[in-house]
Amino acid sequence: MSSSSVNQPFRVAIVGSGPAGVYAADILTKSQEVAGGDVQLGIDLFESQPAPYGLIRYGVAPDHPRIKGIMNALHKVLDRGDIRFFGNVTYGRDVTLADLQSHYNAVIFATGAMRDAALDIPGIDLEGSYGGADFVSWYDGHPDVPREWPLNAKEIAVIGNGNVALDIARILSKHPDDLLVTEIPENVYRGLKSSPVTDVHIFGRRGPAQVKFTPLELRELSHSRDVDIVLYEEDFDFDAASDLAIRSNNQVKIMVNTLSNWLAEEHDAKKQPASRRLHLHFLHTPQQITGSNGAVTGITFERNELDGTGNVRGTGELIHYPVQAVYRAVGYFGAELAEVAFDAQRGVIPNEGGRVLAADGSPVPGLYATGWIKRGPVGLIGSTKGDALETIGCLLEDRLSLPEPAHSTEQHIVELLQSRGVQFTTWEGWNRLDSHEKQLGAAYLADPGVNVARERIKVVDRDHMVRISTDS
Image 1 (tube, rainbow, N blue to C red):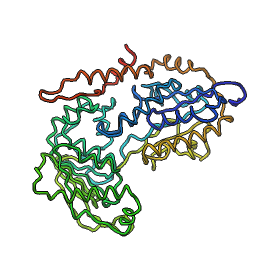
Image 2 (cartoon, rainbow, N blue to C red; image 1 turned 45 degrees about the vertical axis):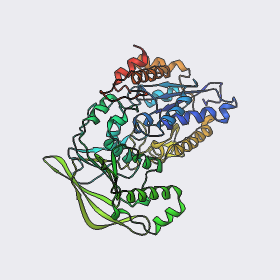
Image 3 (cartoon, helix red, strand yellow; image 1 turned 60 degrees about the vertical axis):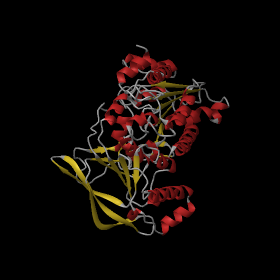
Image 4 (cartoon, rainbow, N blue to C red; image 1 turned 120 degrees about the vertical axis):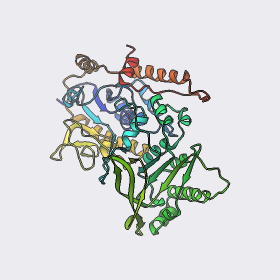
């Protein structure tokens, strides 16, 4: 029986409550079919963490300049009351695909990409070689990672030239007392406080005109107190494609000008040297991480040269840097979902315009994808909104042909979770946790001599988060 044959609510489950999931829900509620009264809609968001917001809460540096604005925008959508939130519910464990299909007309996967992309070079498995995504999860207080992080290196290499690499390098080099104004968890502050770091090196494969970070994130590096930015004249190479990009792309022009100005300012003899240094290297391709007794002692790169098209070729020259830790930030990668086809090469759910495809390439009725699990970990928030718009457009085109779920009332999914003993959290529970974290910030007493007003302190332990959220 199709959903058009009776006046039943059209119910949609969205797996993932980061920007991709929330934007999809928001666009669906505001679509012409819904806003015009043609559809009685019910949307439920399922999130594996007790708290919402996905990568915005657990994948962006706490001092990121735009994090607060993005989180406020997501909060406004979910606070309207027309979208239900089920936190602490893991797809594939607490609910299956069959469960969702029996309770909803359509299922949208918006699970993002939280794993590190692989970097296949010798020594990558040495002690002291880390995935950037794992480190980000630690400093963002993800409940499923260890509370401690080994921070005993004085010299550190960060491989990558995107915003995540800049975030990691900035957190590693920044004085932790300057992070107290953020929502940094207490265990992270204490860990960073013990770090003996003096030098953090960021390495990119191509030149200054081909970097993947954005001007705002680049300028944020210069705001770190008592941290010198160090650049190298031999890394500033520009080919015909670079010159064209500088002339035609204002963002590239701003970044190249910023970097060039920093290079010129380095030679100011009057400048007082800082206690920490953040080095930016270009035209370096990692070849090998070296070690002794199983631990990282250095990293070797091949120097590159631009080939005229903005791409690079190796010169054969090898350069070695003594470091005691290496962080790879060469991209994120999606995780496979139970009972759904997966493209292991790209780390995405195979789809066409957001319609999930089966192994034989045919669309699976009622299954959709949006965000990074749909297109891969590229693009910023604007891309995520456009992506959700396409997916919701496909869903609405299919709406009248989708089968009705066996269980069509809002209470049925609640009863299912309760029958399985799933201690799920709600939007009201998140508001309790949100208030609790803000109260922790207001009551915070820092080390003697450190006076700071804190907006919040994240609760990290999952059980503690659930207890606060459920008021139990």
